[in-house]
Image 1 (cartoon, one colour):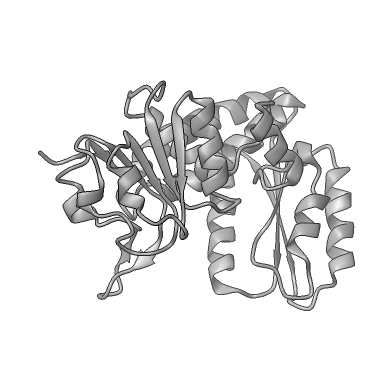
Image 2 (cartoon, one colour):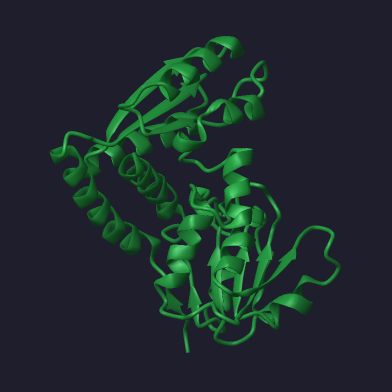
Length: 281
């Protein structure tokens, strides 16, 4: 029996309808949510991502401000702009599109954003809030993955969840969010000798390494939930994830497709964080 697809596209549409309602309520009260997006340089992929984020804001009633700067923009000037946006009460979220030109330290930029406006959830303070269970902004991709898992109706309490990948943006926060949901969590990575040993016992597997066929059908327990965060190209140039989707679909209970799975959720959760920031203030 084929696994049930977890459509990030469909769930994203549902959540954006909710976001639109919440944005309208805030705006009616004189507090329209505002997101500032900063783009430095001419990276084509970054320009596409930013365009999609701005459009998503427009579609949901969030006010967006796009600031574009040349590739030789000075780090000090960028930090000054962030400081000004931190002080602007009409701005509830600040996003600096990565990657940045080599003369700019990304860590310095991330830490310059006020924690109350860190809607990407990347700062050390945001990570600390997540680690200690305090209210704060969750990184958008893991936050979206949790919403996808929730949509299956399967409780994570007491379940064994395996995260493959240990990045600061996906793997580590993903593990913490699963732990908060009362799952028993194992983190696997490039130095794990036999990843299949762990995944074959897992009720949930989240794969985020950026390598095709990292997870194959023989590595998954029948009926498991599989969340594929990867974004790669196959031999024909088509988008694919980190899992062997065609074969895994015959084993898993639920699985996310690529495209149309985790991808649509990332920008949606950015909007959700921006709304939450506006509501807190």
